[in-house]
Image (cartoon, rainbow, N blue to C red; front, side, top):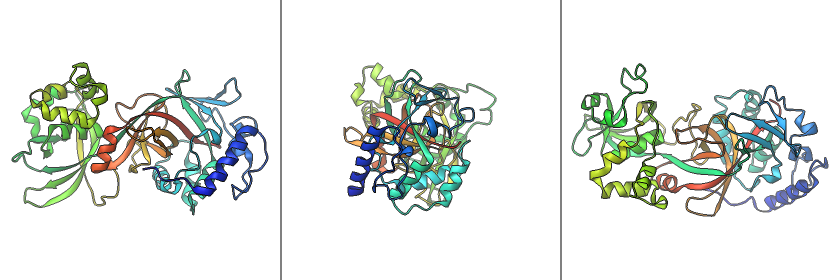
Length: 400
């Protein structure tokens, strides 16, 4: 997914960043690497003059740490102002590929972002270089940490499943995907997964039927899915089922249950490994699935454009490779994020601009991200194998 560096320009960029990192708060202009001769003040922490553009009362009740760097606190994280030179791989990403995800996030700007989003919509970057210079002019990087200063976390992956489905329960298509029951809002928590799946009367709420109960489970875990539905008259078409509600029961990982039961080792508890276990142990599949009492209900949406992703928690379409799910108590929706992790089952660096545009029941903590791979077989493979070390930097408006 990560493209190559911006060749010679990147070398000049890295050299300039190294010099600026050594100079700290020096105000000398960048050398010719930045064609617009940006001030070095763009690359120093948000202290002194740079910090004066941030109103801590309007932002995040900031305070300075012992190193003089601005510290902004959120419910489950703290942000520490950083140098651009401290972002691993900064300058090597294809920022133009990320720009549409920024504009989609700006369709529903969060508090403090209206002015920046207006400028982003009016700006037309002609190159990756232009996009990154624009970011450096308008945003300040902050390293994301836990409240006690832990900088390292975990990156996982998710995707949008693509499944064959039927409108009727015919042949092998016997697993329903349900719309919310009418009494869902009045009963909290609602019935458990075991109770729902054992209640044949609820099948009247079925939007479609699929073949494999694990396919239905993965749709619920991912939060949406694309169905190639065969209608009652024999015609087929693509539709999307999106998250509508859940039963207010706690989420329990099937993989963790299988590890606790001694059925899988921790290194085997990826989604491909879980599916393989299910094929080999059909007699225990319900027991394993019912260990997770959480059950997700769906709503159906048309899918006229197969190139458009599902809507995430922010309410905007997700962009493959450029959207992540986060803990909203750590990073607000609509925030640009610099992600530093590795490719699935690899030590190959994976460093890029992404947008915080979704959340999930298992995405909890300060340095935590679920990376949206897209849809289709390749996305499923990458998402199912991804559990990598992670560091994050948020990019926040200098004037908020």
